[in-house]
Figure 1 (tube, helix red, strand yellow):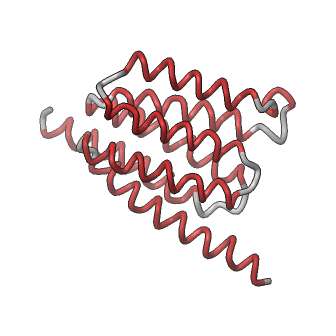
Figure 2 (spheres, rainbow, N blue to C red):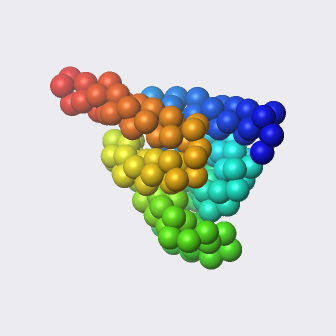
Figure 3 (cartoon, one colour):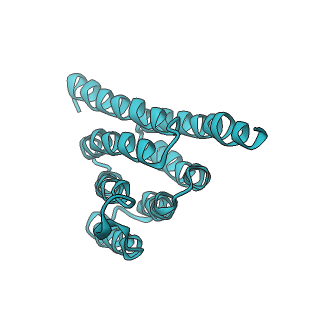
Length: 174
């Protein structure tokens, strides 16, 4: 990978980083999911350019999943609990097509946990389950040498904890 391609690849990942960090500061499920949709676009391209194809395909699943789940409360078609199963199966198919060894299980299980988290209506539960998924993506990013991925997961975990403190803990004290 040439210098210019390297910096473009890293830059796309860092744009995704900004959206994901901002997402966990959302007060509603919709705010969280919309910002995460934008993040997945940038991370899909970023991981594909790195040759980390399972990471790229799992970001596609995440983007489509977040689009459907964001409409859960507004559109009847999006409110079926079967969507959770559909997205886990979709991720499984893409896992089989993008398999790069055992390392591919990390983003796959990150998507499985994330799918369950984002189906939930409670923003607190979205944040809690997202901590687990973030840890899996953190390890994957280290192995795939995704600097924005590594930084993203550190910030995501910090942002989730901040969101829990600012939104969930303060609400409980009122």
